[in-house]
Image (cartoon, one colour):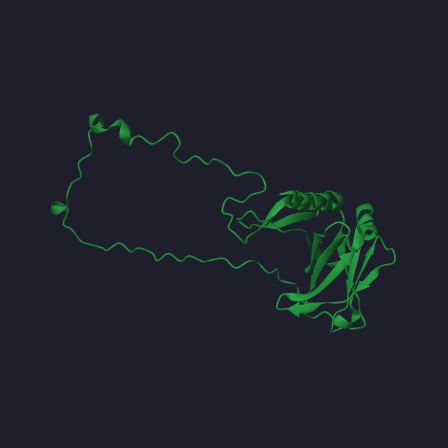
Length: 223
């Protein structure tokens, strides 16, 4: 199965043309001689500022070169990352709980992005699960926790980065994730429809990560 390549945000590449020094032959006897400045000519204004070259630091959770629309890791929780997108405005930053999912051989195959939903909705949280384009869509995708009976979810659409299943989780599902050790995402490759590929979704750090996701959304809603 083809390894999923993670889609990264487009960045602006700045190319700087090299400056080539012109070779000029100057007879040794005609070369100008630069006089070294006398020590007594140096003034206090030429001394470097005490603050020169000092880095004032960056607040935790922020990148030094952050730009609007950029995805950054707000916090890490075990095998999960809380990723947010900079808005550069008073609007709240959209955040998701992220994990790169691998197969039994350690190959990166899928991406799991969970986002919280407003209280009172039928689903407590949603997720976008991205699998390779070679996935057999008619077999759908299944998720189970600690070997228990799982649930099947249909695929929603496919793009150049892969096929996406947009699913919803009830509060009972979230409770199962918090109490579990690992989840299994099962997909079927289109080239081998008689085979099933189990992908391990670690639940290490999920409780702390999900609570951080909810708290981040709650803080944004309060603002």
